[in-house]
Image 1 (cartoon, helix red, strand yellow):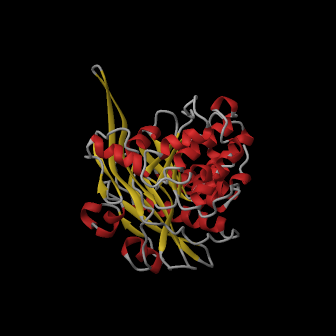
Image 2 (cartoon, one colour):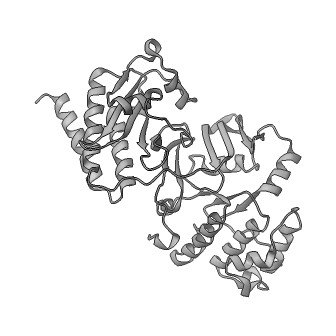
Length: 406
């Protein structure tokens, strides 16, 4: 057996193994696509999954790459993805400059597509969807041999999933509240420039729980600060409910933060000389339509501690006051930056239950965290790497805070 064939066999075995060892279907899909993308050297890779119990369209369930595909979908026969799903025949756009397909470009607005492969994702008994690979990391074009391997790996992945339950229907997204396009941020320190964000594309939807993960320094908090109106992008743009905010004046950004955004920080930032209730009333005085302060403290389970000062409260209680302070503004979206990092497990679960209740009531929540386990609660999980979004997972089975273990 020659080395190239042996490599293919090992790759297929690796795909089957990582899927077989997964504990959930979502984990199986993610690990399978990561393995396929790594072994094919794909810059962008997507699993399009058919919603057979809903609208019948193909929706992205997990992808690797810089674009936010959450709101995109294809009907059978529509575009490259729809054609492959309908015909169950792979399509190979090995040199895009000669075989250009507008439908492929539409899905990936922030990258220049030069080569693409789309293969069926099907078992012997069911057509599940498609796997799409776009561009190679080294800039070269896909070859027919690459496409053959991609088809075999896709078939192997589907067969490994055959005994699992089907995915549930796609999440029902509300309207996009925030739309960020190609956000960059460069910091100057003397003669040294450091580019922290290198082109982030991400939407935030009404009523969703979005978790952002990544190593320290990857740009998570910087991105949160920009779309929260506390910092400005070096380039790119973001809109809030259709209004352009990247060119807003300082007064407009202040009004945006005051009227629409609630912030929860790792350090609670409470006024030490004010009681829990007074901390809330201080914020409520700043906005036009605040919630009732005592009612909000009841929502976070602190109605009995409303006259306590921060020094008289535990860390978890102080964080719940911080959550109440963000909520009392009646915001459309809450930003939480590592809200459980300083808390023990039991207290973290209490805080996460409070946040879960807020999302269930219709408020959007973006949380930056290092805790992988918290991703199981989210509607979507965005992983950042080196200043860009790297992977996005649509979580079709969010769990309750009480089910988390670490």
